[in-house]
Structures are given as C-alpha cells and as structure tokens.
Amino acid sequence: MPAPRSKPLLAWEPLPFLVLIGLLLLTGVVRPEGPPAVFWPYMVVIGLAIAWLIVSLVRSARRTNPDRWGDLSTLEGLDVLDAPRREREVRSVVPVDEANRHQPAIELARLYGGAEQHAVLVPRASRWLKRRYRIGVQLVGGDRPRHAGFLGRVAEDRWVDLLDGLRERGTYVRVPAIITGASRPYGIDLDLSGLEGLDA
Image 1 (cartoon, helix red, strand yellow):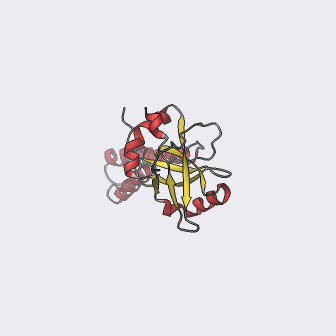
Image 2: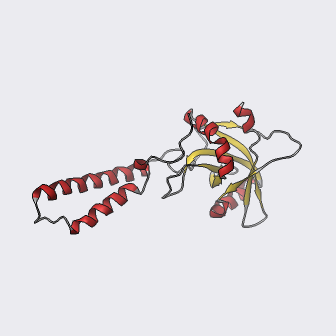
C-alpha cells in the first residue's frame, strides 16, 4: 500500500483554531436576541469547537517518540535498522533539504558527534502549519537526536514507501551522514546506498 503523502484534514493542527475563529466571526450575525432555533444550535457548535480545540491541545502536549512532527527525543525503545554504506566505484550521496533552517541543531550534532555520524530517517514528519508529510532527518551523533531537515523530494519519492512500511512495523532506518562545511552554513549529505539492500 502506498504511503500517505499528507495528513488527513481533521489531523491538521491549525484546523480547530481556524474553525473556532470562523465561528466567532459569525457572532456579529448570530445574535442572542435573534431566533432561538438559530442561536442555541450555534452556541452548541461553538462549544463543540472549543472542546475539539482543547482535545487537540492535550493531544499535542502528550509525549510520544517520535512526536507528531517527526522529531525524536531519544533512540531508546525504538527499533533502529542500520543501512550501512555499500562499497561502490562512485559514491553517491543525497543532500538534506532545509538544513539552512536547522543550523544550531546541526552545529551541536557536529560538536558532539563529529562531521561523520549517522542519521535516522523518520517518515510522516512535517512542519508546523503544513499538511504534507516529509521524511525527517534526525542526526544521532552525540547525546541525543537532533532534527536537521528533510530528504529532498526526489529521494523521498524513491524511498517513502519502503521507509513508511518499516515505520508501520515500528522500525526506523539509520544511514551514514556527513556534515559538510567547517562553519555555518552547514550542509548534510546522506549515503542512502544501504537502502537498496533493504528494498530487495
């Protein structure tokens, strides 16, 4: 079964806020002195929207690993499958997308784990306010995982079904990573050659 490419609309984090704001804007039209058959059902709908917002806030505060945005807090308790580098004549690497947004985290990972380390690929990661699922890249050199960006679209299209299938079984894949650059802006190159062995 193909991996989902985006969050269901009802699971999108901003939706309860938007629904409640939309309903509150209608309070200028639906007044208490208006027909009770309109006002009281409207109040019930506002109450349900507030309850939905509270439930979504409680769910987002709950600690999970990975969390709802695909960030890892630790590798403990996770089933991590190594996909080591395969020897080749020409080494192929894939750059990490949006590494420019995560320079402090990359710098800390480089400080604690060195330029050559590993990264865990986390399917169904996303950014706040975005519905599209991505494959998150978590650097795991040093004391804890650090979010460093996402796989680029071409690599994601190639590997999303394999990685999402493993995720459904509770398994995440660890691949070799190299942090490029001696100072900011850092880049990250991933060696995904080991994934070919998992795809066989």
